[in-house]
Length: 413
Image (cartoon, rainbow, N blue to C red; front, side, top):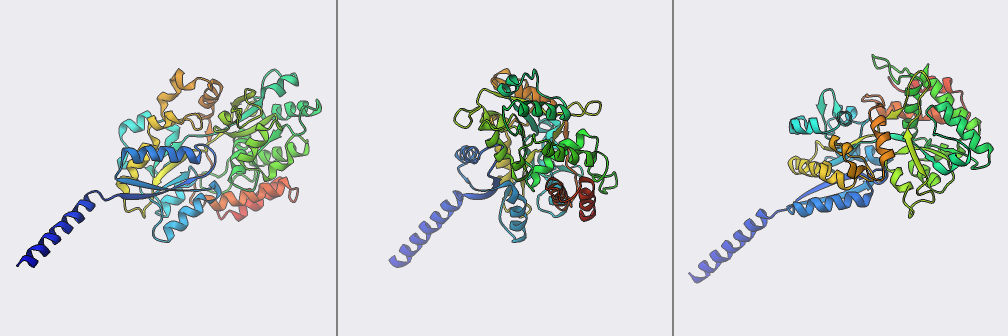
């Protein structure tokens, strides 16, 4: 009898322990981010640590990959039947992700206040066919950065407003011996070059696709844009290594004082002005991307990114809670030095804009002028074909128009 009582008591204690453990069970989320540009890896770790401190029942495992591996990593993990709960995605991927059931539709989770308080352009990052597949997180476009001392030394009163003026000013700086290659770009065979090409294509009045989704970049403004890129190399004003550079290479070259002009994302402004990171701190100017006289006053590309919940996630509610924390105005205000917030109210605050007034002024123009890369489920095939065409033209293995015609044929559209 005593053994029975003892056994019963032990069973009760074990049951109580199991129940107690279950009550304090921890939900684990796996999240995939990129290891470059905008928010740094440490920024994301700090944001996540703040979230876990406020939500001790949720643990978030972070993984970082270069931008170039972000899409493939996301798709491969989903195909394996598991992987990530939360993923960072580029503005160019919602069409593909929605079509292939990679992300869940979160339209019913987005409130009216969120819709009205977040900048309208930011929602284009996550929308496809009238549905939202996440929350916008990084609101970004490219700007033209310039070295104020170099322009002053060359006798240039103001930075260029047109692409032709950029070449002319660069030639003046080169001829005066101030720097050998005044312009640096991210023209490696990667998505980076598509972003620069997009700004030029928009400036020359081109289109990627026709209204019925067929290639249009192989004529008109698309050809003129690529001819401009080739000319800048032929004129000797573009750093020839641009053909192998990504955005971080551009930042390093500009920050080391080896360029007068650079096209890059928001994050470069504060890093190039940081004495610990840059030799040109305090000499960094920024303006919207140039345009074409009589066609476009300023150019910009939509380089924004969002956070979404994968269809494979077993914890969509906890994943959404994490996304809301990461995209909140409080979090974004805290880290606004590297990525401008998605929240409209931020742009009218004199406190947060202090020290980066020129960037905010440029952002108000650039974010309103963002030109989209094409929305198509076959975007990756299209982008790859155009990247190859651009590289062929820059390496002189094909004329711009012929290279782009080949790309149109290879795009599958």
